[in-house]
Image (spheres, rainbow, N blue to C red):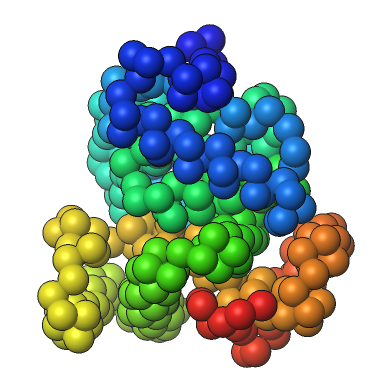
Length: 322
């Protein structure tokens, strides 16, 4: 935070690398669009830049029991309870995950390029964010700003699915308004692949949940668990062929699959179609949508989940104009 530099000054500095200058211009355009067209907070978040010397700003540790798809949760001041524990150093995350694994937990460590302080500080743009394509860079700005609009303590799945839905819809509108048909086509193809990947993972998660509820002996549960993950790999290979060999999810499958690895996929994407359906109910009016989400976020957890589950049945698909 102490190394933040105003983006406008970085762009105007003749010593700035041309590639960084171009990426920061995309950030500035997306930031302006977020407040003017998406009703996202108009503050100093993402108006500054920080160069980091590492590939990710934090590494998150996810954990789940050997025979459960429900994530372990950690509770903190301000943020409440979340389904991950973050570290600013990879070795710290790996050490903690190792301790959990030694105690019998399934664990997964994933790098994170950006995070939100929920508007409590003026979050900077990080060099770790500039690795993405232009449209992905704009998407993360929309996503992180959405956390400042609605945030429910203790419900990571609600928070991340909401922010991802805002990210998707905001990006679709931004690209259409820019007349960038090529980027819009690339995004839609990416969104379709993400939806297919999410379906593979969610199907496996439901299958595993049924296995774990069966009450069978542990040796049998382990065999069925291994079979479910092997089937997931097989289905992914077939899906990859259908994508013409697209390798974007190969790295995810190269790791030993376990219950914890399913957690971030479920957390970030499970209720995205439900939130898109809610936006469709208010005819695409983002301010009305945000207010509906605030009201939903204040409801008891069981009522909130029931409403989202009902919306899932009428969920809007990625790329659908809303």
